[in-house]
Length: 321
Length: 245
Image (cartoon, rainbow over all chains, first blue to last red; front, top):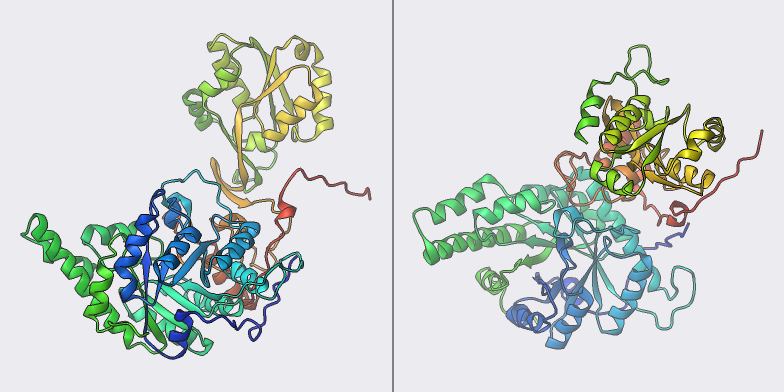
């Protein structure tokens, strides 16, 4: 058995990323998400980065969400850097064993990626490639421990590294997931394994986030509340059904339905999306007031244009230098 | 497999493990028949067939008991095959000595056969292959998982044979086989209302583990970080030689 030599003090990184320095100096941080292309066109990464980079302090690159293959998060993170923005590279435990984790962590560091976010990864039965053999050699906590281990200069075999990487490590939590107490402990475990910042699953009803934040108050971690603007009632219903860990209330779905009632075509679309933006703005304003929330993480989910609108609309623009 | 399925529903279990009430809970290798067309395709160039089954897992899964051997006999005969007879092993085909005894006792039939159809798990098919390498043995079933039978015809997975049991730490509920992701450090973010993100009918194993350890006052077991698992213990081919006592 390989022991994760986890030591909180040792895990404090020396690396300075913009994300880290803004969080540490107490700014209310905004991160946004760019979905990688469903194919080989890297120009799309650059275009999507341009759309959101002035409105975000760092840009997340998702990693084959729901097991639907998209351009690798490492490659996209490289193009985000090349475009002049700071990436947060997501790494899921679903598709990598410990060997590939190590290999990609070296590669990502070499390309200039410093913010790495670890997640378990959605079950492939929820996506387009359900026949896949899932990996889960590690879970997200063990993967964080692995990254922390590499930062001490040796690989898991104990062999000295030719170049020691240094990362600002992050993780996720979902305040709606059950059992709540166990998910609170998981935040502590993730912190102990090296995570310094957390991005949450999309928040709609903020009461459970408030309760969750009370549970993790003493952990001394940075938390960015997840925001996904709703494009309409169908998207909301789909998310409740198919996106793990999402809970959108009937009240919000009714508001979106009402906004489109009696309207057709582009007029309906714009009215419904406007309501979706309004709900997201209200949520941002609500999470700002929750003690311990250090920022928001806005996931456009194919609607990256919503990110500038939300950031401007909630007084979070311009972003600090 | 309509014909055989129909018969299966009519059969009454009288296996050695049934208790007085007829209700039984057994652990076993759980199997299911391959599609009948696939079986016919495997046997396409063979005429004279010998069927194999046993009174262990194969019978308990309703794939290789006497009744299913008879059903298969009818089915293959109806499709132009000649079934010479059955080899039925009391216990399991995995007991190579018991299997060999049955084979030896039926050598005439074995020698006449063109091929063997095994209505037992992959171990059974390979055991016959090793004992009778001059002829081909074909699998009639897919081996699915190691499971429990809470009631007749119902099987649930319970063990992944990962090589290093953790049930003493998880209140007797296995996170490797019962969490859809095999996680060791608690539930993923897709666990809601006690159910798994994968589908609405699967319970979250970690919710079950949490509830059970809470009752046992052993939640400390899962508060600490669990180390990376040694998956080399889960990979075959594995062999164990126990010392005789």
